Amino acid sequence: MLKGKILKGVGSFYTVYSYEDKKEYTLKARGIFRKQKITPTVGDEVLFTAVNTDEGSIEEIIERKSLLIRPSISNVDNIIIVCAVREPDISFFLLDKMIINASIKNVDLTICFNKCDLADEALKDYLKEEYKNSGFNLIFTSNVTGEGISEVRSLLKDKSSVFMGVSGAGKSSLINSLFEGYDLETSHVSRKIKRGRHTTRHSELFMEDENTFIADTPGFSSLEVFDVEKEDLYHYYNEFIPYINCKFPNCVHINEPVCGVKDAIKEGKISKLRYDTYKQIYEEIKSKENKY
Image 1 (spheres, helix red, strand yellow):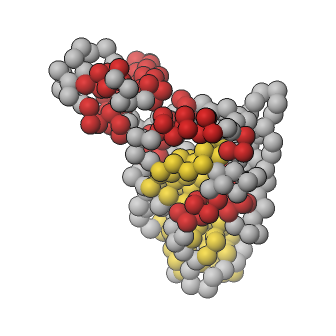
Image 2 (cartoon, one colour):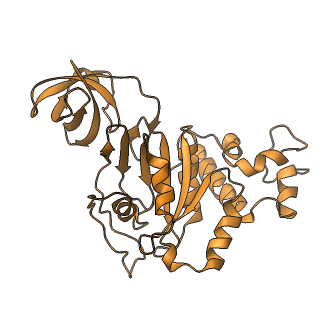
Image 3 (cartoon, helix red, strand yellow):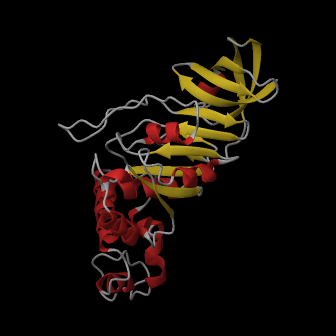
């Protein structure tokens, strides 16, 4: 059997890059995966058999080191959350939900504030201030001016990296700027609805070299927080942790008295913006729990 990596999946067909002969194969997955309720995923390393490059089957999925649910992609080293500073305007609620979902997977996370040619220094300073204690790498980029492009490029070497974000954030344009020869489909933001169209229709890995993979993923306008209990949500806000000195050991830092986190917010030590999105996400998780 040959060993390879799934670069793309469309319908029941998977494009697999073979490490042995450096070719791409179009394969189907064996029926046993359906019985086991396992779906081959972009990023999976697999063992496969092939008659030729257009006929063969995936026989085994090698154990994954990580798995993102949305976008669905495995074996990720880096997640770059791309968020436009303008056109469309930032939804901090969506941004923080993306951060939470990415943090669960224990991979390196960078917040990329894109389209910075549309922002003044005051807006950039505001974003730096609000997210400086989040514990994540912050990069400001522009495809127009070239700002931050080399900084992002340096994160990607010899790793498997995923670009994710809302529709119209400029993920595909950013990837086109990072590497010569890339021509991913892009679109402009609708002036009427202030959102981008979904030009990337499925997750796909692109090879920069044999050890460097870059994934462009479909944009979205809504997002669920997966696998987080409301009582555990505060663990995903790194800036809360130094101030957890509360009266009650099960404090969730919302309505309880004598709360170190709430005191830190009043004193300006924790971003009020980040705390407000925390409360929004907490209430969303709570409302879903109550339905069941």
